[in-house]
Length: 319
Image (cartoon, rainbow, N blue to C red):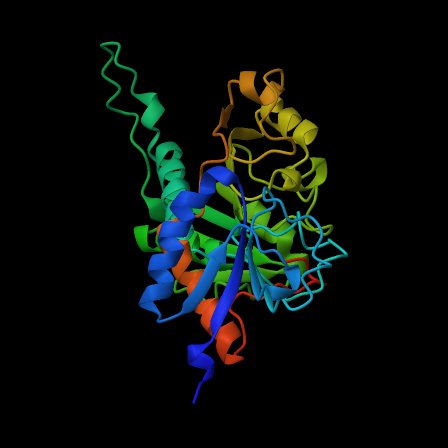
C-alpha cells in the first residue's frame, strides 16, 4: 500500500545554467537527508507534470500559466520584488530564508559598524602617535535597524550582544525576526524618533511601494549630524540625490552601500567617486546552496505532506 511518503515529486530547477551543478548536488543531498523522493530536472516535456518550481528570476521560466499542477514556487532569493507582481504566478510562492545568507548579513553589518565605531581608518601608518584618538564603548553608540524581518532581527541580536544600544523599526512594529533581547521596537509613525537616535542606520527593508524612497531629503535630515548609513537591503530605499547632498553637507558622515537602483552600478555613477561612500558589489549576503537546500527540502516535505509552507509570501504586502 503506497503512502504520501512514497510519492516522487517532480521539481523543475529554473535558475542560471551555471548554477545547476552546485545546486543539483546540494539539493540532492538535502532531499536524501529528509528521505524525499524527487525527480529534479531543468526541463520536463509536459509542464503539467511539475509539482514544484525551484526558482530564481535569472532562470528560463517567465510564464507560470502552463504549470497547472505546481503546488509551490520556492524562490532561491530572499527578495521577491521581481516576481511577486507577476500576474501569471498564481501558485503559492515561498521566499528564501537561508541560515547561511543570514550569517553573511550579520557578519557584513557587524564588520562595517565596527570599522566606523572603532575608527579603524584614523590610524594612518605615518609615524604620528595619535594616542588621544580613542573610540568610545559600544554602549555609547546607538544603532537603528530599519526592517526587522529575519535578517534584521539577526543583525540586531548580534549588535546588541556586542553592547550597542539597538532600536529596531518596522511599519508594524513586529517584524518577522520576532522580539530580540535588548532591542527596543518602534513602529510606523515613530520613524522620526528612530532616525533621530541613529549613530548608525542599517536599512534591511524589502522593496515595496511603501519603502521606495523612504530615505529622502526630509528623512535624512532627521538623522543626527555625523550618522553613518549602511544599506545592504534594497537600492530603491534611498534617494541617490538626497544621499549625495547629505554627504556633501557633512550631515551624513559616510554611507556603505551594497545595493543600488541599477546593478551593476554604472562606472560613471557619483557613488564610485565620492570620498564618503564605500561601494560593495551586492556581496553582503548571498544564498548558499549548502544551507539553502535544507530550506527547499523542508518545504518540499511540506508540499508532499499537505502542511503549511515556511516563509510563504503575502502578495498584498509584497514579501
